[in-house]
Length: 143
Image 1 (cartoon, rainbow, N blue to C red):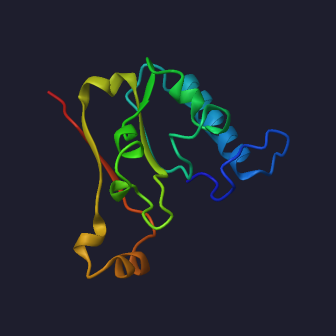
Image 2: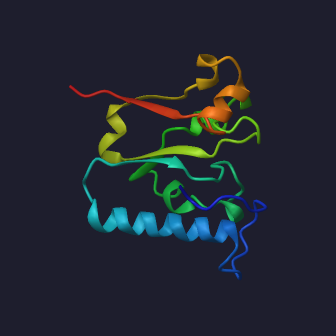
């Protein structure tokens, strides 16, 4: 769970800026994976509190996005798709992501948002009892 909130703009000169903190967290995550999990099958998922489709200057995920031979966000189709499937529908935005390493590229089948509110009487009930975000799921196939 990366730092929430902010204005969508990375303030590179303010170490307390929410987007800057997320950027640094992403960079540290990538360094950790590159150092300790080279050639390993890894899934990183959760509430990353930022959008994949931000412009390049303000996109905290570029360290992963610019390494497509090593990493991919399997939920690009959700981020760029219909807002009805976004993970944070009341904002509205898609802030919950699934990142996989290249060792899993051939195993990735599908990624989807679980419309969990459909299993409750309303969005309000789901949000009150569970979360203000929807879960994002992934299906991986193995021989």
